[in-house]
Image (cartoon, rainbow, N blue to C red; front, side, top):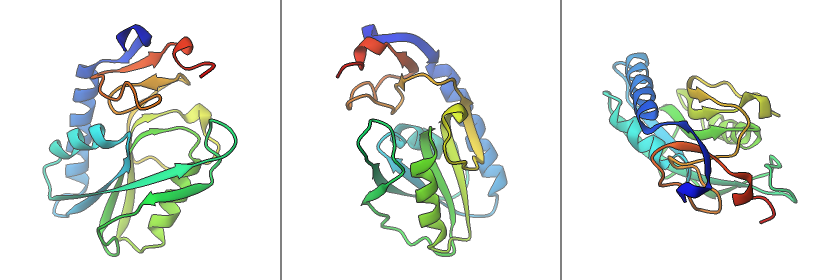
Length: 180
């Protein structure tokens, strides 16, 4: 797996330090409240786990799995909910946890869906943000890192279900995914 990495973009230490900072900011912003963290499966699991341990206020967790599909390898914005929430959202402070925001199409749909359920508030935290790929704007409340438009893997992000377990975020060599 390591041989497929062109370059380490963010080290495990850089990620850990930034996740701790974000957790402290969320704790301060929601002081005296309880939040429901909603992780977008599967990529956000590792980030969400570390982030939850960095938050000092009461946290409940739940997950959604969504799929955007179409004829191409990029998001069409047509979204199917594969796993919905188990927790009630109405009247609660929601923190949506994403691994990476790319086009914004799927996330825009997901946020609209959650708003329709009448939460007290919704904020968005992402580990990685690729604003130059944005097709639909989404407001990011807590941003880990803004990155250039590279195919990245590690720390939960995958290609064909591989590389999620890498402790860093790396740029995948094109030959590892082109023509497959």
